[in-house]
Amino acid sequence: MIDKRREESDLGSPGSAPAVDPIRVAAISEHPLTLLGICRLIYEEPGFELVAHGSARDGVLDVVGRGEPDVAIFDLELPSVESLEFLERVRSMGTRTRLVALTSSINQEQFIRARECGVRGVVLKTMPPHLLLQCLRTVHSGQEFLEKNVFLETFAALLERASAQLPSTLTVREQTIMDLIASGMSNRTIAEKLDVSEGTVKTHVHRIYEKLGLHSRYELMALAGKKNPR
Image (cartoon, rainbow, N blue to C red):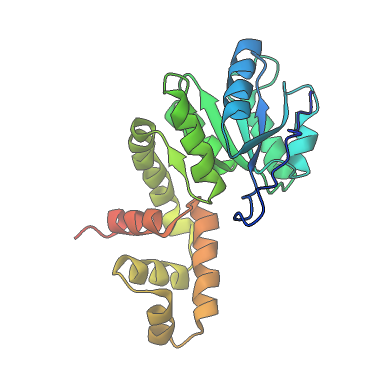
């Protein structure tokens, strides 16, 4: 692994606004040309810092595991290690680093598994370079960046899978809360209706997310709508 840190000073001129911390990025690929392209793109773009790059065998996993990068780009086409297993290892380390997947193509099952492993951004290699930078910024801010066609094709599959798990997975109270969320109620309103604390409702919602593999209230509402079509 090569550890690359910029040496340029971030100090501005006297009286200028404080410099914003750059987004710290690690790049992982076993294709030298792909890796070189990613590194050059990151290095030359203001607002980013390339802190580590290399292959899956070069120790980059340790850097990511320690949470040193803010965002890590993984080339899903890793010839020496099954890429999704590699992501599983990263997730098991409990890293704070957010994950972005770079790939030529991705099917529904791979997309679902990658998302379950914590991937919050998917960029296809056929997309223009500025979209990778946009993805990194979006994921760093705590949001998701998913290529539109991939998302549309797999979102239905995610709902189908979660819907099949509903009867055996959720408790009666969790299903009730899910239905109330689908009706448009906020956590506070649900708490008042069920005569419980808002914190209790939030705990139930978090458990529903975990059990069904969901990541947002939008997904939960979409699933509830599928369960109870009007």
